Length: 296
Image (tube, rainbow, N blue to C red; front, side):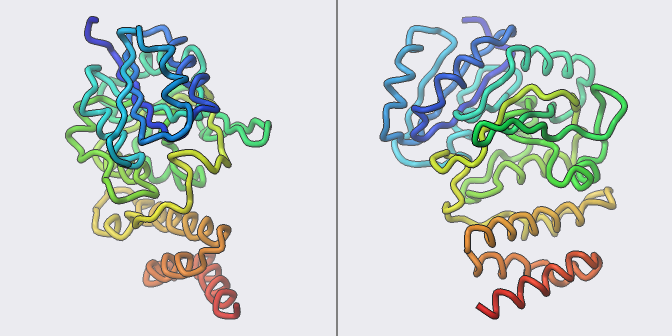
């Protein structure tokens, strides 16, 4: 097999329900690629489903001897990848058939970007919702300030299954940090965005399944620290950088609150109290949540 343009990394854990559609969406792409599925110890019929692809030279199935989590599994895939570019697709998500062709065009237009990303649809309970369409008159463009665009968007403009990046970039920036089991993807995109622009396609090319309880990448109960404590030590020319970090903290605290994890919610809100006073909405939310939790 000749060297592929793109290596697709797909971590999976007990993905028998959805992984066939994810894999088929990869093989509908019109660019040279290889698919590396990193199985993090599935106990269902995931391996049996994937056995249908064993004869393909552009398919590799790697099973972890012990659980490595999404971060460790993706890192293992990157280490084995032969492609010039790396794309990630979670086992419960789906690409449009022209997704990688669109990424290839972005790469040709903006060769010096560090991340190539697109808008997407979220799928939950049979409903489709358009997400991450940015306010811009152009269909594709270069984002110089990732943090400003993310704050304006309400969360990161980069989502794992809808981005592609150069293999040399992900190896230059330390890869997904193992041990950070929630937000390890946001952590990596942040560290890349401190040094590179983001090339963006303002069209949805990915379908994200959300609200799944059995996904390797969506289990709230996973232990592990969120990385924002270190983020405050980084420096950025963007005036939106700290706003972005606080936004992520509050969204994560809200998620903890929804899951009745009040200790985590309180700890994370308290961790940013010294700078949250600059934002009146943050101060009010902080005081409201702290008061509510203490009353329970």
